[in-house]
Image (tube, rainbow, N blue to C red; front, side, top):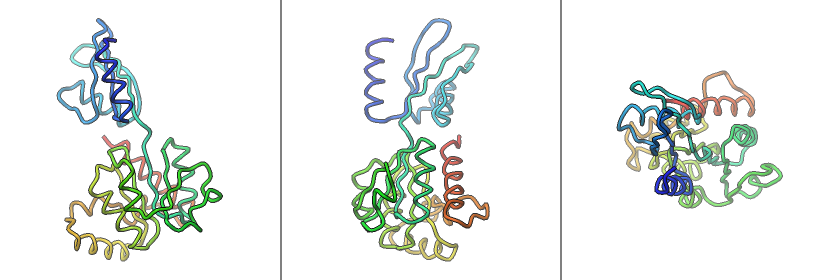
Length: 224
């Protein structure tokens, strides 16, 4: 690998930017492709590989290329250290997500309830202002309390987060949408929110709801 290419790859990895190192197998030519780049067929194939988090060989215009994927772990910010947050955080961590639980209520956001996870006991708008919100980020609000959920949703909708979900009934979501419209969000932005959150699998218990949310998050993460 050429020195300038190695330097660019190291810089991208240090920033947590998704990158693919494409190597042409017949002559060893290499190219670095950043997330979002779709200038040609090879770049488009690289975006598919990034979305799947899977390295492999592709055929482009009669040539074989090996696509080596360098992706940062997907991030999940859970707003509300409630019962559903416990199985959801565990499932997400097991699925390779970097999980952060945000709740200013210190009686709920404890290391006993959320062992080995990053806990932030600050208001969501303050917490999210200091956290990266990019295309590898999911935000899920679970509190039912507009004072906590709405600021997090505002931050998420202003970002490139690949998934935004909010717990609550259809009636609750309609009221939430009205509040967001009142602060300037249009219908297209509000439509990014998965609310009620999760796939409709008839989930009842906290663990079942967590499964439905994880399935929906992964479905969006892997969408091409």
